Amino acid sequence: MEFGIHDRPEALAFDIFGTVLDLAGSLTPRLSELLDDCGAKAKATTVWSYWRLRQRIEQYQDNLLMLGHSGYLAVMRRSLLYTLRTFKVTFSESQIDDFMLAYQELEPFADAVTGLERLAGSFRLVMLSNGEQDYLAHLSRNRIKIPFDEIVSVESVGQFKPHPAVYRFAAQQLNLPPGQIMMVAAHSFDILGARASGYRGAYINRYDLPYDESPLQPEITVDDFNGLCDWFGV
Image 1 (cartoon, rainbow, N blue to C red):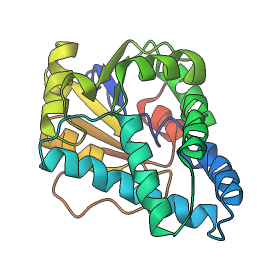
Image 2 (tube, rainbow, N blue to C red):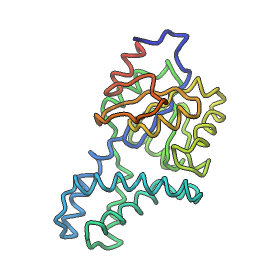
Image 3 (cartoon, rainbow, N blue to C red):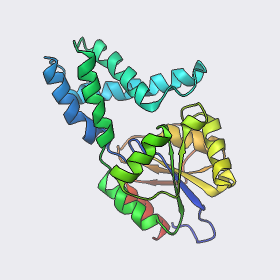
Image 4 (cartoon, one colour):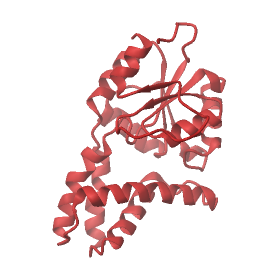
């Protein structure tokens, strides 16, 4: 099934971290180096999996406790410290400082770059991300190298996704009704938050994970950006 031209959303709002940018591929090698430098025996892949889950908890805690948006990079650092301590890894602050520089050099998935190029011109392409505004601009310009039509940071809202205020704010910024925006993400929580706010949803299931048991299902489920482009016929 493909959307007819009149059924298409006007804007595609993309999650960036993990959907467009390959976090595991970019960070796991650097994490392995950090663990070796610290004399730790834990495997980088194991630590990464735990760290990734902890990132979600940190963001959800900030939302639930109404602490506001403490910053994407700050949360990544905080959750890394918690994870390393969980694995009994002894580290120095300078080692963590050096490691965190890897976030400035994140690599995009190849299919995401080619997919965004195919989609450009047919839709308004929007970054809708937990990252800070300046950081997202850097990633767009220097790492993804795709000129998004708009960059919307949750920093302006003071909440992390999937807080509904994020999606409502983005719709206001884009001057579009929520139903004319489709959230594109590789994480079901982002689709859930967007769908609950009236958006449409495209689930990029690049990690081969089940979608949540929820009535808020995506309209589209594909393996990667190539599948998304094929679905839209672009």
